[in-house]
Image (cartoon, rainbow, N blue to C red; front, side):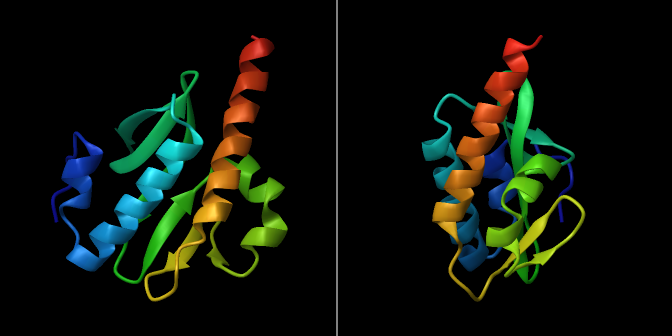
Length: 122
């Protein structure tokens, strides 16, 4: 698998068609929730930035879509994310279940507000 990505499109194209569809869904959901955010590749994963700070990352894997809302997003939505396998700053959405796109949208909007608040204090 290629490991030097320059765009999210390039990243998504490395996955099987079914996974590509899920990655496109999560990308579109993030875009809709944060239309002013910019897309980038960070740590060789798709990421969205707003106000110069990362909002969220996402990534495709063999059996799941990884979603990385940085620790504050994980903490703020602990109850809602409890149904999913988690790591320190990540949550895993299984490929064989519908993506919780409404929840992803809520988390992204929360992160936008958080970044706006941080920008005010700079």
